[in-house]
Length: 252
Ligand SMILES: Nc1ncnc2c1ncn2[C@@H]1O[C@H](COP(=O)(O)OP(=O)(O)O)[C@@H](O)[C@H]1O
Ligand SMILES: [Mg+2]
Image (cartoon, rainbow, N blue to C red; front, side):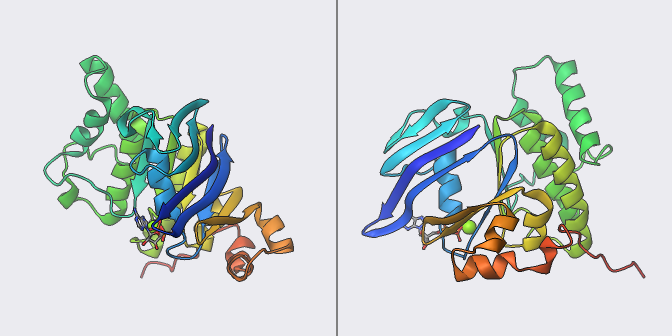
């Protein structure tokens, strides 16, 4: 369980996050809203990279941020994150990226098994010795999700992870995310501006505008009574009628 209670962060007089409360169980919750609405800042607060002025962040029942106090530092929160620009290290192999997360806490043979097993699950069974420069965009994103999940995090955060991919790669990755994150039964918060991604992955949406949660709930609820012009436009997208299926043009 990932919970935020009344989180407020101001930059000068301007509220960046304004009394934000939300909770994520074993599900993928979509975080959407106009650009500049505070989505990335919210993820930074959850990660412990930014301290708010007020409110509580709780992970698996433990308070990790209380007001301006960081009670548990970022690397000790058990969180994994997948960004749009992946932050892969160009000089490390795929295996080394995953081994870095596991650190020295497993015997070597077990660590190798975990790494290879994870690479099979993301569809990269033969990529262990390759470096990011030798991979396609979609393959790099598979490495990022493998790195995120191999350490068995308590929760996982996604910040527009599919935005840079072409349509075919995005459709493949959506299948993969749905299977992996669903099977992991983890709380996941998925920032996206793409209705197709939200429709496919997210049972519930939280809409953040000007740092405030203007509405939260299923797409049916948002459609029935949209709380803002943004919600009305987003929820009306036909992707929600297709459950996010992406039409991939046939290869020529
Ligand atoms: N530490 C900070 N200090 C001042 N302003 C900030 C800080 N972090 C974010 N902002 C501002 O807060 C707003 C929300 O930004 P962001 O969280 O990146 O939005 P989103 O990810 O929804 O596009 C923006 O106007 C941004 O410039
Ligand atoms: Mg952002």
